Image 1 (cartoon, rainbow, N blue to C red):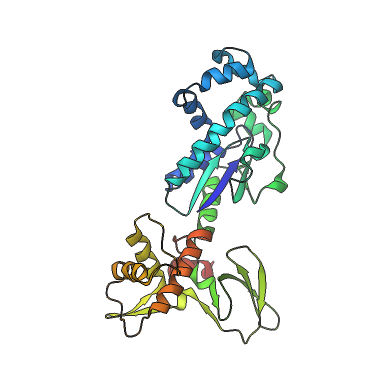
Image 2 (image 1 turned 90 degrees about the horizontal axis):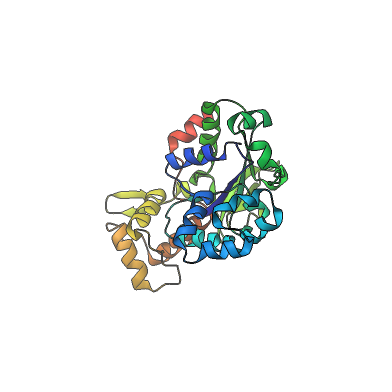
Length: 314
């Protein structure tokens, strides 16, 4: 599962971005609201904060004007936030979760949490009109360097325009099996990037992003073109993946090194009508390798054929 940090300055629109992502079914961890809830749910946390900043908890807003007190509070609270997020994420099933925070990118304690950073930007004039406290908060929040972001979302137009940008990003997160390659003699899966001048295929490993050039004689098969044999005909690999995912019901999949009995039990449940005379145990193991790689580095939210048709027409 991918973890994506959504960040941006005060009133940049990151909360609207996260609200829209939530409306599309994505799990979003709102670090501000979750932190506030921790003050009441973690025994003794308020007292620890008071001891750290030297004032009653009711005067906690002083941290926005006193850097030393703010840092003292962070040393107490951030470990609790990290623990809370980790436990929250373990309960989520899906292709990605989002962590919303204006300051997490600058805090070393959180730096290993995410796989991508989405930076939401907006003109200062617009931010000032949305929240009069912007100027005051800018003094305590460092502006984020765009070079540290994997994706930049410019919130400089209408709400409709912002939503369209998010729809495009959501579509890009889908897994396109027509561009996921299995290469004979090579371990793991590769995402097709482009063809070179001599018709060699450039592939990017799903696991680590390393690129490899495969010559025209390489035996390459896309996962879109693979199917298994059943009593009722061929069953596309995409449907096999979805059936396995449903059969697991949130549980971790076995690996190709699991026992033969465990692997066959899963396929008996996921694809009970498979043809044992043409679909072998070795095939099951290979499919499990692919399934687990997609689960870790991609998703089971697949691009549909009509999506590719629309893209071609555009």
